[in-house]
Image 1 (spheres, one colour):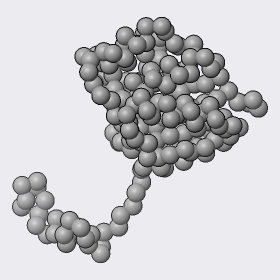
Image 2 (cartoon, one colour; image 1 turned 120 degrees about the vertical axis):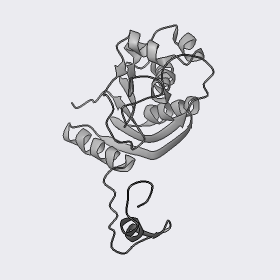
Image 3 (cartoon, helix red, strand yellow; image 1 turned 120 degrees about the horizontal axis):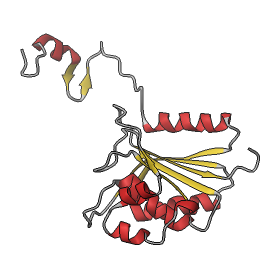
Image 4 (cartoon, helix red, strand yellow; image 1 turned 90 degrees about the horizontal axis):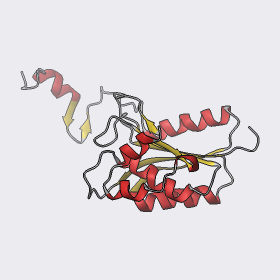
Length: 189
């Protein structure tokens, strides 16, 4: 028996080597960021929205990513834009939150003048950083002038909680990276 409780025979038949799967094993991807985005895309279409999957490999500093997302949204004629991946945060403060919540605050700073844009960012596992939230949902109505004080302390959780803008799902039991959805007010819905 192996130390993990598997017999030598079972573990050996699964893989000949770490790089080469055995012939009798079928590998099937049942969940991925791309699959999640495709499901969101199809659902948006059933609701009558025009939709575009922008990327499933978003990455980089949260401030830069926020600017790229907003720039793309403002230039687009599409009602719903979908993004997937994971950005990074340089944590300097002692607040509560995670990369999705912080991304929401940076996006919100840029969309505060646009009443027709709503933005959601969430971890597919239901957990964002050191908080119970998966992420947040923001628009121009949820903007508060003290946003920079919360960003300085990396305290996006309390900023979003105060306005009722946290997205709390509980742990989902799976992780296919983060999902971001930008919705522009649809003219035909």
